[in-house]
Length: 332
Image (tube, one colour):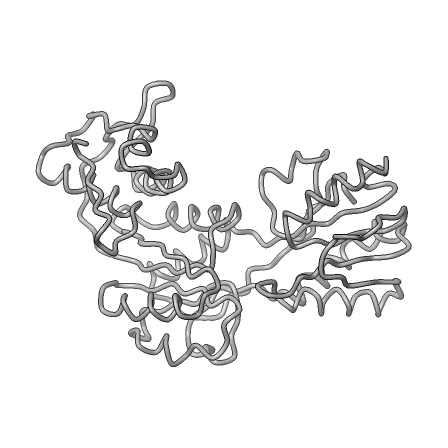
């Protein structure tokens, strides 16, 4: 396909190869201001790529002002200014709806002379270690999301200390690095205190906590609130074989379990926000409309992205807590 080159044999992510292809085509004059580029569907079909992969590339190109979309017509070259001052390595744990919001916010708040390569370790320690090792010396900044991993300082210290930024969790062994983080325990406790007036009508609070990749602080904050306020409570690993009863309020980190709870309530003709309550974690646009609106406890991912981008561009240091809040909707 003209203008787009994908090579399966090299270690560069496919979305980055799409971006690099557009940059190369611009630099050698194959693409000029106003030229149309291949469509998302054309690239998907030609290279057997998912829409998500191509959309990540298009979103970054749009965020940098390189391309623009015209509804019903396609994507066009909007700028040929591709000189880059910063090349940024971003290592997330996984891609989901709210991480996409975070990533997009980072892109939108970096200047046009910054390039971002994003990778995912999927909670696999060896992948985490290998990706960091392979990135040494190739970037001007490194954004690392350690997630559930502890004692990672030996790996991360391979990178230039002044170029590293930690994201999402405050880790005891990484306190010498700048970080934008969530305080999961305090966030849940504060959110439940804020929603105390809504919770009083429920006879039992139930948190579905599967463990694994979920922050343990959420469970601790939930327990702390329930004990202080005298709520009957329970912590379970999943909703399988759980009989939903009137007067219960559920707190659910997993969107898969969220869907199950909504279906269970419908099957028993229990009205959300009246007969039973549901609170999800990590807000998304979809939760605004599902089942009339799902109440969430969520950090502001847009703000987290803005803060991180500002730290990178200003080369500033510090430990910045990204506060969460209770977003009230019909499900509680």
